[in-house]
Amino acid sequence: MSDVSLTINGRKVSGSVEDRTLLVHFLREHEGLTGTHVGCDTSQCGACVVHVDGKAVKSCTMLAVQASGSTVLTIEGLAHGADLHPVQAAFKEHHGLQCGFCTPGMIMTATDMIARHPEGLDEATVRAELEGNICRCTGYHNIVKAILAASKTMAKAGKGKAKVAA
Amino acid sequence: MYSVNYHRANSVADAAKLVKTGDAKLLSGGMTLIPAMKTRLAAPSDLVDIARIPELKGIAVSGKTVTIGAATTHFEVSRDEKLKKVCPALAHLASLIGDPAVRHKGTIGGSIANNDPAADYPAALLALGATIITNKRQLAADKFFKGLFETALKDGEIVTAVTFTAPEKAGYEKFRNPASRYAIVGVFVASGKDGARVAVTGAGDDGVFRSRQIESALAKGFSPASLEGLKLPADNLMSDIHASADYRAHLIVVMAKRAVAAASR
Image (tube, rainbow over all chains, first blue to last red; front, side, top):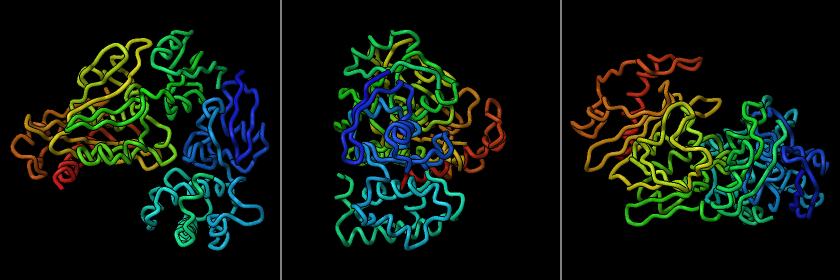
């Protein structure tokens, strides 16, 4: 067992976990943050993507103890109260989901992607950067549309950079 | 995953001590080790996390000499402006590994210490004639990569950095498995005053190797035209569900031509 302490969605959290506990299980089972999903469990599907110290990572491929001392942002920490994050709003607007299982990971990957491309995104870049996120419903088309739209909205609002720090 | 004891090392000296515990393994980005532990293909008693050791991180470029700390992530290598000026091919290679989330965690030291036969970095380091620096010694890439998942590293030896002289020209092209993004064939070419060095990953049944046939063909001129009509034997190449040895032999020449073209742009 190891003690872990980290900041999740702006809240300081600590606990004692088995060293083999994956970050995704810590988030879901210890913290009740079930928005982060386990899809494939083989590091391929990206349903478990969260931000650790501002970077998108697969929380099923990282131990909770590895994240100790870090700042974690999950899908639950994205919206400001009732106001959806621009990427969440764009997924809703452009019908970027059907069953919704991959959506939390898609949105966390998208916010990271938009933050890393303040110069703007094109379709080819979005599709290449979505390589680590698998969706079995949509055929990706509307996901790509939603990310492109969100990227434009955020560039206009000047929010691209600001959200990474959150 | 079986039970494991986690330790976080604060320095290389600290890691060298901790790695002597039980059947310990070093943990860097964990992009191979954690999945292997989850499927119980690996079951170390202890993990020594070296990813946060400051002396293992960062990229230094001085003239043509490039030194990359072992715990530097693929993302950092792909984005480094100093590196892009002297050896853009290596930054390009790093940008092709896995996906963004994998590149944020995976490290160059972890990749070469694991020496997956389809990993990208071993081809680059072999073609660049890089030197691998450990906490005990320095090793030429030619002596470091020994076979499938085999390196010259001794028990408890820790890769701390890699260093190389940037070549005049270099290029990397890979034919990817669309699911895993690992190379079915990847070819790194480097050209300098001593001629061309060409290394192939993904194809050899004993891991990464230098292609002397392509190197001597390029001695006639560092151009894709020099490789026109070249046929490589399929001996010692892998056959698996993704590609036959014959197909890989063909792909090596195709990827080499594209890498030479990319290097010449």
